[in-house]
Length: 264
Image 1 (cartoon, helix red, strand yellow):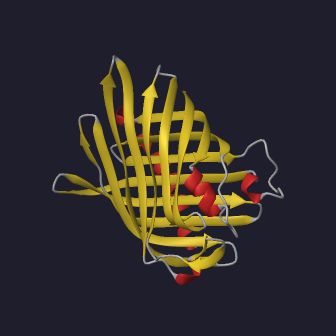
Image 2: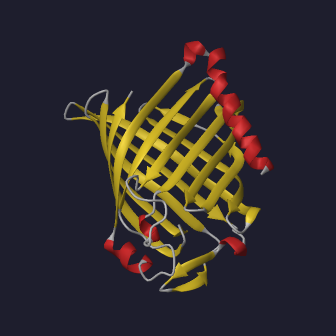
């Protein structure tokens, strides 16, 4: 809980930082509707239960970020199955909520690369169930033309229903983007990825083949997207979403996400 309070304060401080760097400010915000379509392999594997069952769903998202010489912050808030009840006989069809806040705060430089304080909070809620991942560590950033990448590494604390808050190993990952032009149109490829390492046994209880097993201590979680900026206000995208030993299942899971965004 102390880490959660620290990360919340860190994000709040970062959000105020642009006032000191108005000449270097950038920001974006958008709303989107998305349809997540799990592959038949994922639905067949997870459908055996006893939990972590995956079914297709629609989600609404509000997303935004801003940055400057001080660093940057990013966040989103999702409502999954917005037209459904939060308590259904089929729990895979519950209305669910997810949010994420990420901060990269510049501290110094090494070899011409920024050394940043990194923090993120991811919170998921579903009918009384809560799973929150808190990471605190270091990051850096590299830019070259239309390409950028921001790798990170940090300590991972997890808050989960019936388990409380515990240290749960380490997490490393990245976000990257590459903007380019083709056929006189604007496109971007982007990715986010997280690898969790050294997870504790109490967080490894997952479903597989209709039973309950202890998953691997290492997990993968991420997505790869192609975006088409049709106009400055309208963007569409296709995302390949993947996870292994995550999302309640000790198996490989993947999906395609179809997105339509309105950029403010």
